[in-house]
Length: 215
Image (cartoon, rainbow, N blue to C red):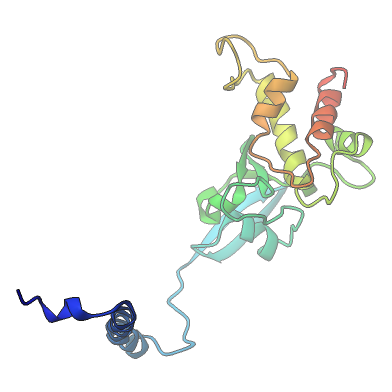
C-alpha cells in the first residue's frame, strides 16, 4: 500500500525541513518589529516620583517605574553596601529593613515604597561606631569573601527583632509560645541568606553573642 511522501523523509531531511520552516516563521515577526521600533530607539519610559527615608535621611527620586528598590539604592543613591547577587530573591544579599521588617530589595519596585522607612547596612553602623551585630561578625569571623555579609548582618539584626517581638517560625513546637533565640530558630530564620563560603556556624555564633547566649 502506498504511503504519504513525507514518510520517505530521512532524519537529515526532516531536520533541514524543520529548521527552514522555523526560520521562515520568524522572519515576518522580525520584520514587523523592525518596522515598528527603529533599531537602537529607546522604549517609552514611564517615570514616577517617589520619596522615602533611607537611613534616617529623606530622599526624593524620579525613577523609571520598573526600577527595583535594590537598583534605586545602588544606582541612584549610591548605597552600594546592599549587594546584587542572584537578582531573583533567592540569595538574600540584597536584604534591607523596610518599616521594621526585612525584605529582598530586588523583588520590590522602588515606587511601592512611598514614605517608607528603609534601613540598609550603611544605616546600621559606621567603621568607628559599629552596630553590635557588625562587631560580633568581626569577632566571630562570620564572613569569608564578604559579598553576602551586608545582607547577612541586616537579616540577623531583623531576626533577633522578630524573635523579640514574638513572631513565630516553622521550627517552633508551639507557635503560640514566645520564640527563643536558639540555634534552630536562628538557622531557620536565616535560611534565606545564602553564604557560598559556608560561614554559617560563625554567623550563628555572632547572633548568639548579640542575643546574650553562649556562643
